[in-house]
Length: 75
Image 1: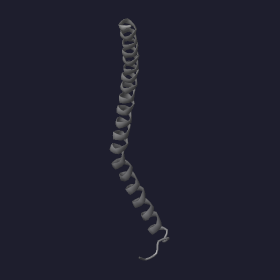
Image 2: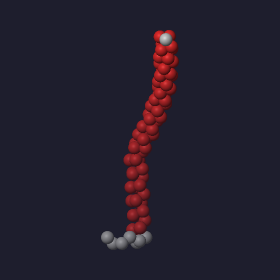
Image 3: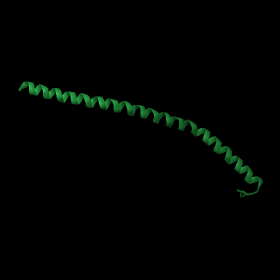
Image 4: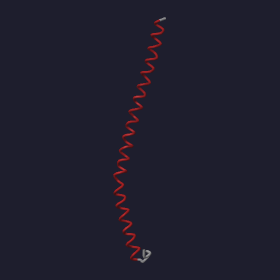
């Protein structure tokens, strides 16, 4: 009877060990994906000032063109 219980416990422990191994693999994969997302977000954040500078320059040029063509209101 004890052999049956021992075998059952070993079977359960092996199953738990296998599941934990799969969870470790999935966790490592998620960590890699999260790191990639963080790097992507950091790149986007770093590019925002450049985008704003270019938009400001285009706005100034448009305002200049509107003034030259007298398309702007006097306000």
